[in-house]
Length: 367
Image 1 (cartoon, rainbow, N blue to C red):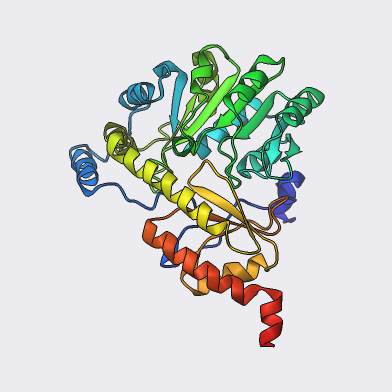
Image 2: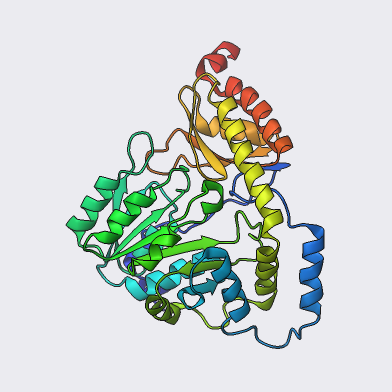
C-alpha cells in the first residue's frame, strides 16, 4: 500500500502538534495550574454524590443544573451557555462551525497556539497580528487586520497567554461595534484580572466568551469549560459539540466548585497578591525584565543570559517553568506560573543561582 500519510491534508502535515514535554519537579510552575487543590471536604462531597449515581448510565445530555449555576455565576442567561470537556473542546466546536477552506481568522500573537493550529487543520488561514514591542495588544492593528482580511472571526485571549496582557473592555466593545465577523474573547484567566466582557453580550450578538474551570477553579484534572454567547449562536455552535461530552463526575465537581466559590475566590486573591510580590522582586534582578500580568503567571525576558540554560538551571534545582522561546517575539523569555508562597520563594532562590550560572561572563570566568 502507498504511504497512508498521503491521505492527510498537506497543511496538517506541515504544522507541529500541540504538545508539552512530560517533565516533573518538586516545584511545578509551568502550566498555569492552580497550586491549591480543592478543599478535602468539597472533594468528599463530590465523591459521595458520584457514588450514589449509577456509572453504567450516560451523563446528562444537557447539564441543566450546571448551566443554571453558570448563569447565576456569570450573569448571563442559561440558554446562552454551552458546557464542555474543557474550554479546548468548545474552541474546537466553535471553529468547526465557523472555519472552512480559506476562512481567515485574525489572531494576535504570541498567544495560545491552539486557535491557529485548529484553524489550519480545518483549512482556514490564521491572520497573525503582532503585539506591540512591550508585548501588549495593539487594538488599532487588530481592527485594521480584521477589516483588511474581511475575517469572519477575530480571537483575543484576555488575559493573554503567555504574556498576561489584556484587551480593555472599551476596545472589545469597539471591535464588536464595527462591521465584521464574530469577536471571540478567551477569558481563561479572567478571575485573576478582576474584569470581564460578559456584560457586553446583551448588546452584541457577535461576541463569544470562553472560560475554563482549569485555572481559578482548580479543576484542570477534570476538564470543564464553558462558552457564553447569544442563544441563537449557541444553538449553532452546539452542532459542533460531541454528544455526552461532559462526564457526570466533572459535572458534579463543577457544581460543587461554583457552590463553594466564596472559598475558592480567597485563593484567587492570594495568587494575585503573590503575582505582584514576585513581579516586584524579579524586576529588580539585573538583566531581567518582568512583564506586568493580569493572570496567574508572568513572563520574564533574559537580556544577558541564555534562557534555555536558565531553564535547565532551574530544573536542576527542582523548579520547572515554561520555556516559551519558540513563540514569536519571545526568543529570550520564560513563563512562570504563580505558585504557593513557598514555591515562589524556591523559584526566586533558584533563579538567582541559575542566572549566575548561565550568564556568558560568569561562564567564561569559570572556563
